[in-house]
Image (cartoon, rainbow, N blue to C red; front, top):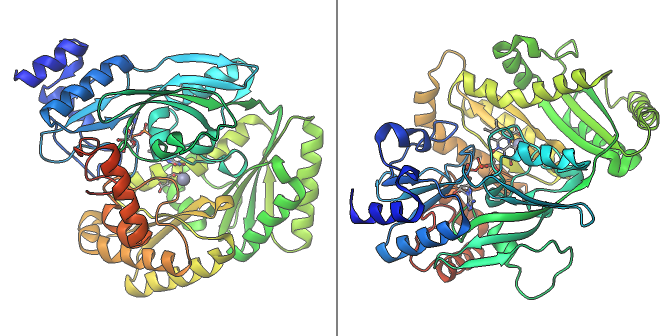
Length: 471
Ligand code: FAD
Ligand code: 2HG
Ligand code: ZN
């Protein structure tokens, strides 16, 4: 063991400094199996003070650090590079719920808390912690904040950034910034919290957070509806926004192709709406009033939608288990795509008013340039967020298809995103996947400002180098 590893072991204990090939392998490949790196060691700290000491040691030795939560990110942000000179700092032991403040409606958690555990701890005290995504059983709150994760409740409650009131962060120098305050107002100069949220481990290491809680809704109704095109789907969204206002908590769009793929891999998750409609939309209303009140509202809005020819069919879940079935079907699209083989992901947003044009035109360009290609388009339509994923034509090996076509396909989609004034990353972040594209997308001035921030906060470029921006 070299001197550096011995010193690491002195800080956290030798059993928490993993170096054996088999021990570290699970930490070196991302969820999509898109990236595999190497590492000097994987370290498993238990306390903020230990992390501060690890960072100081790394700074003195010039060793770079890759923070890692559940390693479910889609952009390779938590995967080390191929040099074998980095350490992975995994948060799985930093998993305590520190405090639930019922009067302030906040929860304070360590960064390694699994998202689902935070939701359950909040629910146990009668609160809703609204961040919700398919990976919630394994992603961690530190990773959620570092990527500014979105998910299925953004429409009503916002993304991880909107839910965060305070942070504790270990800086690149190894200092501890204690910003663990549960304040809803705090205009004391530059917002450091917002600088670290969404920075993907490149500016500081998030060790704990104060997050907002909400009262648990007492009634929830979930429906699946069929629509013929995006234009009517947006009109339907606008109708629900107008009639249900803040009761509208979910509005997820799934194309026929997305659900056909899901059914092929998970036959028990077939779309209960028959006739293979072009679009199926999952809509959820939540309230703090009686079941009957929300149910009536939902029926009224659906009736109006039928009469205006916005929808052709609808099924309202009659119980919790049927509602969960609808959500499972939606969340299994990603898993079905993974079963099918590697795919090219595009996590994008465009303004709602541009979605129809964007999809029609991009579909046409894609089909013309890559005959037989499969467009698996679904997403959080209420946020204008599409997962516009591209899979190889049937019978074509996905790996070789992607090898040849990944770059031009990304370029095609991103050129369309620019044309429609959208974003090339809605909720998954940048990581290493979109590092190259970011400069052109942000523009020279914004990109230079980002580099200046990185240089100011991490002059030695030790925190997750070559992710998000390269300096
Ligand atoms: P990781 O993947 O471990 O890390 C992500 C980034 O954050 C890396 O750059 C890493 O270095 C950094 N990081 C991690 N922890 C820290 C820390 N404590 N301090 C500083 N930096 C840190 N994402 C969505 O937004 N919406 C979805 O609906 C959604 N659905 C998903 C469904 C599935 C099935 C899967 C597999 C993923 C999904 N994701 C979704 C992507 C992913 O789950 C999120 O990006 C999540 O927030 C990542 O959390 P993590 O703990 O796994 O982070
Ligand atoms: C979702 O919304 C996730 O289900 C995953 O963000 C998206 O698989 C994807 O591309
Ligand atoms: Zn998503």
